[in-house]
Length: 488
Image (cartoon, rainbow, N blue to C red; front, side, top):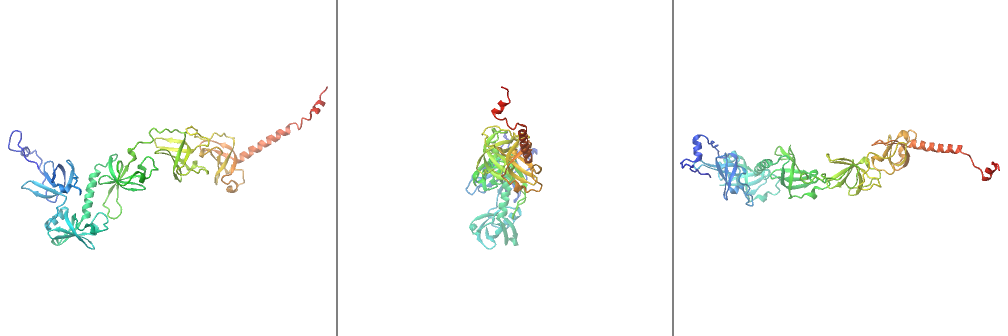
């Protein structure tokens, strides 16, 4: 408690009194029993904690009300607490605060506690079919319905018998003969206040410490000191193949960054109104594996298949760095499964978006070499061989010998197949069939082939060869025949 001190000139009036006389001191806000207010802790003692109410008026609260069950003090100087006014002594100028009235002992105090929302203490003396029997002191008894015993489902209410707990009075009738109390309402109010205090520090971009409360396949939940956030699996580590359960365990203390805060409507029974959906990140505070990454377009590298999806395979090239081997680049003979090492070529590299497109490396490609990724080196008019990869209604796709991926895969349209219209292509060109075709067009995604053109080229070559033979002498004759034609 503060005391008046004489001023520097030895005057009997206190410094505060002089201000009051001059009208400069702020008027004290009158408080009444039952008021619920905020106060700033100014001094923590062994038995009492002194607080400031309005910049001038002080009050106190028993230290036991601010200690954990293990006796640890939960507040320090400068902290803001919320409590009720439980006693005002105008003659002494003191105000006593409390989280509860203790055991009120009389019905008038209990009724006042109901009107003011002040918690009271009661001892659980028994359990009946509907809930707990509670002794409030002075022979006054109350009832706590089973649904109001806790903020979660209570399996064994008998465990509370003999305990002194705090409750809010929710119903007061017949002069105190029928009193209903709720522990759940008090717990929810305290949790809401704790969450509101914790949310003051939870802002987008803030770096906070928290404790992992539970781990799921999709992420981990973290208690930030009264409010809960979640680290999605994608924010656990830069390496997306890391399982949440391998990285975190309940009870782990972690440092996280707040990525996003959204309003979210709670679901299920007992929802308490709008809440906050807090997204956290663990990987945001770790080194970015893309920084200084030694990769270039066209580079042949070794990677490990870490994930298979309907649109391709993800390949880990370095810890936390993955590239996509698109399904269009995978031939019918591609067999690599998760965990296997493969050689690939970096087809596209977008460092800003952190995306890498890959293609299978040719059989003879050396790791570290740089290859052209714009297409194959075949020329228009060349006759090539390949294997039927896929059959469509408009033609067949052929993978050229010595190539892998889409760049070496060409389309033979129906008109270039050299077969009658209506032919069953799956019977005539089953997958795996070796074919010879002529190159009609080249370029990224524009390799067009012609089986008919290859046959025509072969026939033309045979014709030219036959015609050349017809124009040549049938025989040069013997050496003797040559001598006959000469004059000796």
